[in-house]
Length: 335
Image 1: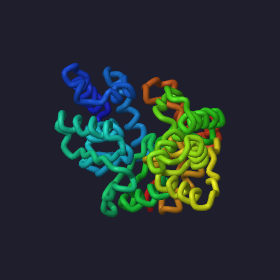
Image 2 (image 1 turned 90 degrees about the vertical axis):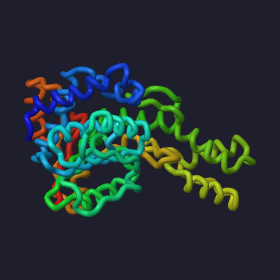
Image 3 (image 1 turned 60 degrees about the vertical axis):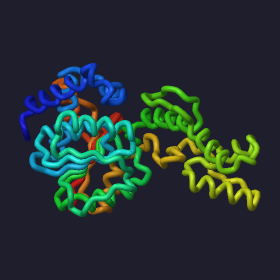
Image 4 (image 1 turned 135 degrees about the horizontal axis):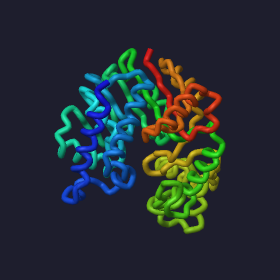
């Protein structure tokens, strides 16, 4: 792989320019809210090391390769991969503000071979065997249909290509599971506000009330509220179908909120922080033609040698160490 120091310096130079006051209007504030470390060279080294560590774990050198980031956000990992020598770096995401920021970074800094697409997993399509590597970084826990993603990833990868999954929703960690279920509760039932690093703007039950009220303005507030409470984990078409069935039969839907199931955004179908047991996810991936291995992950991108040594040891102790890991990695090779 290309020299780490040279790549991290190029990443740092890009974001040093991006952070200048005259460029603030070009990038959504979310860029700096989620990645405040990009304002310093040390922070850019950390983000670069994060990508290097993923590639080393997967034994993948991006030099001259075609890579895809499925849920790329503002494109940070693809920018690092571009400077690592990727011939083509493609990303897609459903967030318009994040994609606009990514597109502006591409244009402002002349990142040749880097592409951004505003699209959902259901909308995007690529020819078979297009990519050498697909990255899902903190994204698989938000896909509406994980099975569809795995099927498409297997099709889009060339034989021998690698799928890298990095995520913080480790269902093998009991404390993390309890915290994630609190996040689910807030997104489903509110109240609005910041919680667990997320901002709840409008709870899902309130969004379902909006959908029902807009389609059936003649219904009473009490009925609208009852129907919204009993259509949990449904999207707009299913909600309206359930309401229509109620109006015809007087039978209320029975999809009440289940605190053990991840809630669903009724407009987009996106989920919030789906939990995965890493070993089970690796086994699921093998059904799609992958050879997959899961790893516990404890950190180390900051560069602290003690943390990095401890992480390397605990990764080798997977699956015993999974119970205490906040994050996990799955490396899957297309057979």
